[in-house]
Length: 229
Image (spheres, one colour):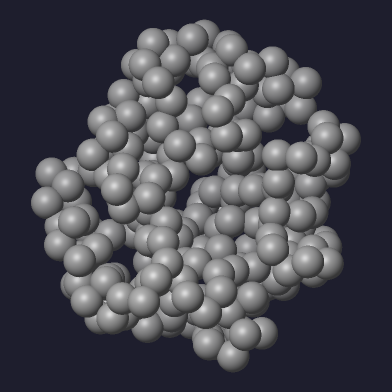
């Protein structure tokens, strides 16, 4: 199974190498593009570390595409953001139009579903984007789906797999925690990770996305949890 760890915001290549060695973790997900990505890639590869994916918001698509190409990532993960009073269909259509050209050009964009009732990428919007953009991939956030289900605005996590499993190429793994905000140990009020993991190919990345405030021991335990799925 492919286990990936999310880097901390602002973490540069040198710091990533230090943490990779300490945690014995070689595959990483970036919460934002690295500066001077091509040089960073050479530095990381020399240390045995690879960047699997990089995340961006809608405003950063161009920069993320450039960084993703330089880092040779498997996926550029688009977090669609919040509706903020916008019409859901219009917001989804705007994202379709923004992603169309770079997808045609070969950029490996995927979308990540959001949490909370005001997230743009809920169950219906995800269906709209995947149907309109055949080249678009999907990486599933199981705990985000759980949070939306509890808020009464979406189905359970396995319904997502039933609907979009054939387009799903990755799984974000974290627990909601006592505050329901996410970013906690996967066993701390998380989704049914065994069921979700078994619905995906072994090569699909399982990305541990714990809050940066957690210390190395907590992250290491989270990695053991993911590797045990």
